[in-house]
Image 1 (cartoon, one colour):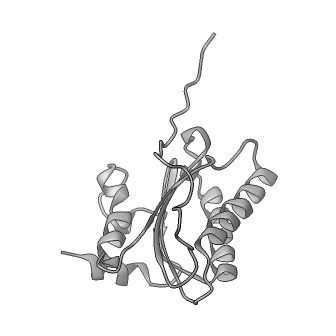
Image 2 (image 1 turned 180 degrees about the vertical axis):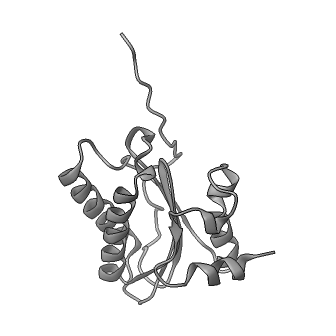
Image 3 (image 1 turned 30 degrees about the vertical axis):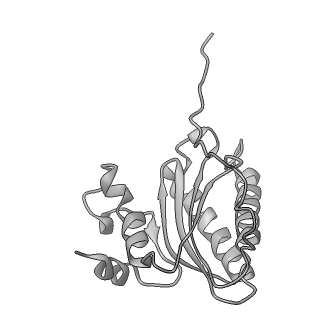
Length: 169
């Protein structure tokens, strides 16, 4: 009998930051892994479905999606609240709920692992450095020779070419 071992992203504290409200003009670096780290994001249709729900949750919860990168088994996001009532917890919940629901309507199985990784950027942390890290993931992983060559990176706010140019160097 073959036993499948699922790779899971381990987090020391899978919950949200205690004592932090998540409401306001904050920037978040987020990483969400697919259930059992399956390579679901190698499929363009799955990526497009998830991007649609990302846009929906961002609009509803008042967030700008500055950068995203769909790796085969996980997603990196950089989002920023654009209103005093932007709620990071609600964004995460809505995005994962919407995308998981629509994924399950078209395919078997679960889309997401239960927990993800979140990092609230401090004022002194440069957005450009986080964008650079996110966009260069496929190159570092050997999935593409350049950011421009990889089909599953982008922004819902900026033109990809402008983001790449702002992070060169």
